[in-house]
Amino acid sequence: MVRTRGYTYQTLCVLLLLLPAAFALSLAIGRVALPFSELLHGLAAPKPNLAWLILAELRIPRTVLALVVGATLGLGGAALQGLLRNPLAEPGLLGVSGGAALGAVIAIYFGLATAFVLAIPLLGIAGALAAGALTFLFGRSGTLTLILAGAAVSGLAGAGLSLALNFAPSPYAAYEITTWLLGSVAERDWAQIALCMPFILAGWLCLAFTPRGLDLLTLGEAQAESLGVNLSLLRAQVLAGVALSVGAATAMAGAIGFVGLVAPHLVRPFVGHQPSRILLPSALFGALLLLVTDIAIRVLPTSNELKLGVLTSLIGTPFFFWLVLHLRRLSP
Image 1 (cartoon, rainbow, N blue to C red):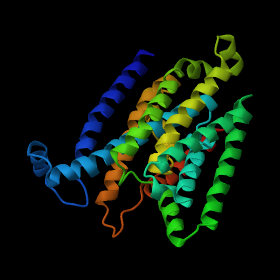
Image 2: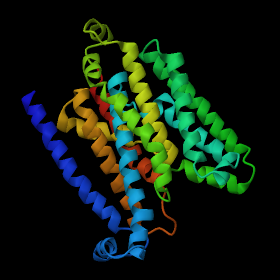
Image 3: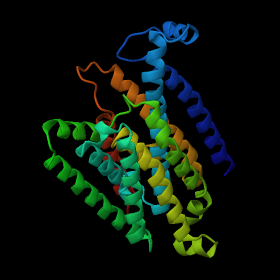
């Protein structure tokens, strides 16, 4: 146990060192080529100036959002894998991401996003909370029913998204919906971030009360209950935390897959398999992973900037196949 704790601290220290380096690199890289010295000069020079505007209005919000969304997805994935005791669990499994996407698409479909700039995150959060409530309503009796209810809610949200695309009022609306669904942290402003951050922080707070219950749940549901774990409360805490945080993150950044699946698995060899030790490293690694992926998007020599959700899927899909093959080899 002491050795595992030592590995955990070492992993956290490495991640905490890499995150500031990635943050600084993200501020220095963009479509507009600006030397890092010029950016530093822009911070000290009288404002407004070009370098300051690029940093304050474009690169800092984008970087902060990538960190927050990545941390949320990594934390949510680790919590769900611990709750469901399923290594393939990730935030989209319970329908929360689909509900958030559907809410945001409704705002685009009916033109609310044009009339009110915060309509997309507001309806995205509302969709996530509605999807989470529906999943819990039908799946609160057990782990299997929770997974089945999440699959049903995800299917319902997917059908709603397909209907919106099928009956899009104009080609421009269909293009806007498709573009948003691909996922991105670019072109988001501080007002959107400020609107969604309270929900994300509330979700993180809910998940902060779950480590002991998740650890005891590894012994089995009956054993966990005999040791004083209220399984219904634990499920409600995890689902509420994921619905609030991942829903708000999806409402801001669109559908970004695989980060919640990949991050816990990549940190697990370094911190052990105890769920409570995986939560924080998964959040930090999720933040680092998404930020590095967003930096890669800006470096890739493409005529149009590649969407973040597309690149995470390209990276995550081979990992998913590897994970399936690995689990098949381990199965009896």
